[in-house]
Amino acid sequence: MSTASMHKRIEQIKAELVNMGDMRPGTLSEHYKVCGNASCSCRNPKDPRKHGPYLQLNYTHKGRSRTEFVRRDQQENVRRQLENYARFRALIDEWVELSIEIARAGRQRADKGVK
Ligand SMILES: [Zn+2]
Image (tube, rainbow, N blue to C red):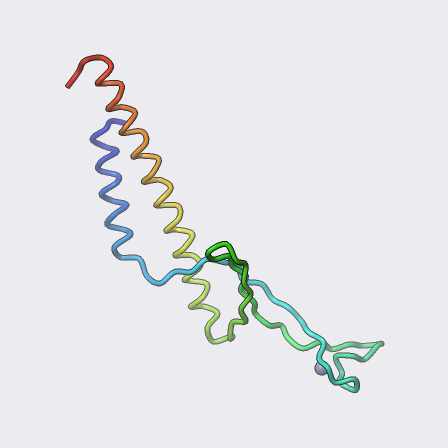
């Protein structure tokens, strides 16, 4: 890849970042629960009908891992935010890689005495 096309790709990445919607890190999963009521059907020893499924979001932020419950009607929103975050990270990684490559190419040119 030429330096010019790497710069061009960085401009594309920036343009995509500008238009990016809300984002958040984490993974969604579903869980069933047993409640505190001893006579509830969720505690039936023969045919337990646990409560749920509940949507749960696990994520790590500023070094702390957290768990949040997600309402059903927020499921699609949250999924979109998770996808945006994954895309954001991929774009940033690509940008950093291109920057390293560009810097390396610049060093090689300097070593050869090319301006
Ligand atoms: Zn119950």
